[in-house]
Amino acid sequence: MVLGPSINGSNGEATDDGMNCEILDILYIRSNGEIPCNCSFGEQINLDWAKSDADWDIDEVFYNRKFAHIRESFKQGKMPWKECADCAFLNRDEPVRDLIAQKRISKVHLEPSLACKLRCPGCSRVEQAKTRLSPFFMDPAVWERVLASLSEKSYAVDLFFYCGQGEPINNPRFNELVQLTNQYYPDTEQAVNTNGNHDYPSTIGKLGADRPDLSIVSIDGLY
Image (cartoon, rainbow, N blue to C red; front, side, top):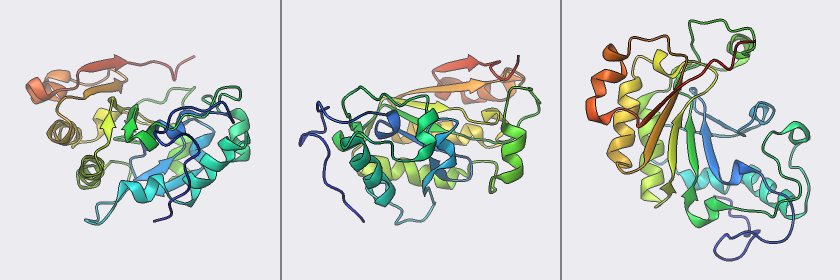
């Protein structure tokens, strides 16, 4: 494991230096296990992979060479990658903040599925499906290993958010993903961003009290 020096104080609080981005606050995992940056441009940068291997360790991700490069770049007030010039979450005048260094994640963003029955003209999913590596559905075994490692390493999580380039509920094992999250983080809020084209009594409704706390019906692919 590559451990870079802290760019903040010993407790990970913000300093008066550099620039900031939510990549040091969140964890984004695609349906195939890719761990990219968390905006439409940053998604071109893959930071690591989530795997179901018993020895997979979340800290091996958060302190790998690419994350070390991000931290050092922000400390120096530089953009880590050329793609960052168009980042929706980059704050050039905001002090560096590294919640991950505090063992806290503001949002774990999981893409359960790249599949979707709709063809919204404003959505890039169809093009991404032509170039991205499979699988297009998150394997519950991979998700469980992520949750287990987060728990083992004592990370607090503020929110689990099921969203991505596809429709989350298209994953035939979506309910298992939600149940696993409840198993490892029973007190953390879960939200799903859906296109609203599913029979909820036969999908999310089956979860009963274990269903996500919040359902967001999105039409942002339309114009």
